[in-house]
Structures are given as structure tokens and as C-alpha cells.
Image 1: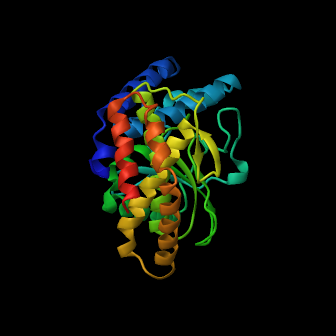
Image 2: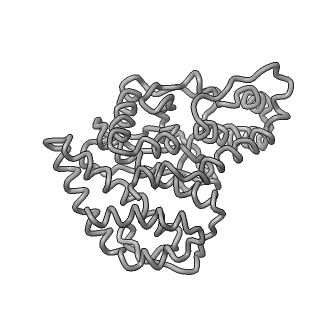
Length: 307
């Protein structure tokens, strides 16, 4: 099974998206009953699913803080006002933001800073929206259209850095379909990082969709973290990093100069680290109870090992 098929044909995820979105909207419906109508969220089931989680998170925070006006806003905007924030891309409407990292909230829901769409949200400046749109196009052209379309709906571009700097990126489970990442002015590099984080979102959804619970009692050595990690984190790394390797190998012929050298060095580094996981990966996969998901994770890891 090639990578596009691995990422695009998992019906359990699509069912999970629709069911979860329906449940969230049912919970929030009382807050919007007095509205004559409500705007429809744009795009696909995956976009609806992503935006519904922003609305749920924002509404819950408003309710806990007893901010009635804010709660009413989420009730009136079941798409978190996405239609006013959308950036066109080859994958459809995307939400591209540039929040100030120093002002992002931290709370018990996440070890990392995060951002929730709300009434004060504004789209990123035009140059960053163009950068993101070009990154989506590059990723799609190299076989990752479905992954990015369904699992990188909202992207928060954080610190602007130089090529060669350490680029931080992350996702949080409470806001699936949302990616937070640093960036340089190179669409092919941003596409790599969007694919990596979209891979984390995909795997979280796949585990939820198949009701897989991974034991945290068994650990495996992670060459990326240089420490033993529970199977959950180990399997996440052994999925997301191989995706970026496959993408990098495909996109390299399109690059030259500093970008070519940067991505070549990255791919060589990743080859060595992934090779160190070859034996443990099969052992970790045995903890995945869903055969179809287990086979998909194996396929991605195997393809990356062959590069």
C-alpha cells in the first residue's frame, strides 16, 4: 500500500470526524437555539470537525469563566467565524493565522502553548497566507493532499526563523486538525513541517476511530528524543518522521542551493535515526489491536526505511 492510499482511504477516520462533529454540535445546540440561523462551516467533514473542536474549547472556557457574551458568540458561530478568515488553497479553504507566541495561553489541556479561534481572531498577513498556500500546494503535488486537507485545516505560523535554525512545531489532542509551527520563507520546508504535524493529527484520529488504547507500560528507545518513550510516543515518532522523509525524498528534485542542501542533510539524518527503530517498531506495532491501522503504520515505516 503506497503512502497516499495509507492516508486517504481509512474510512474509520471519516466516520469518526462526522460522529464527533455531530456530538459536539448537539452539546452546543442549546446555546444557539435562539438564533434564526447559523453560518455553515466551510469545506469538508474534516474542516467541520476541526472547527467544531475550536468552538467547543472556546465555549467551555467561556462557560467556566462565566463570560456570557463570549459563550453566545460561539453559539452564533458554529464555524468559529472561519468563513471570514479563510485563505484559498489548492486543498480548499484553510485558516492561516499568525498569533503572538508570547500571548498564547497555557493551561492543563496542553503542555505547549495553543490558540483557539475566537471573536478577536484575524487572518495572518498576506505574505504568510501566500507562504502557507504554496506549502499546501507543494505537499499536495508530492502525494500528501489528503493528509493535509483533512489534518491541517488551521495553521498557526509562529516565529519567523532562518533556514538551518531549529524549527519548533506541535499539535494538541484537544484541537485536532490544527498545527502550530515556526517557519522560514520556503514553502517546501513549511510543507515538510505541516506534513509532520498532520501525521500526528492523523494518528490520533486513527487511534480514536479504532478505539485503540496503547499500553504505557512498555517503553522503546527513541533516537529522536534520545531516551526511552512509552509506545504511544514511540509509534507517533515512527509515523510522523517517516512521512517527512518520504516527502523530502520526493521534493528534493524540485529544489536547489541552500534548500537542497538543508533537505538532503535532513533526510540523511533521519535515515540513521529511523534505522535504529527497525526492530522495536515491529514490537510496538503488536500493541495496536486494529489490524488495518497496524498495517498502515507498518507500510509508512517500511517505505521510509527503503529510502
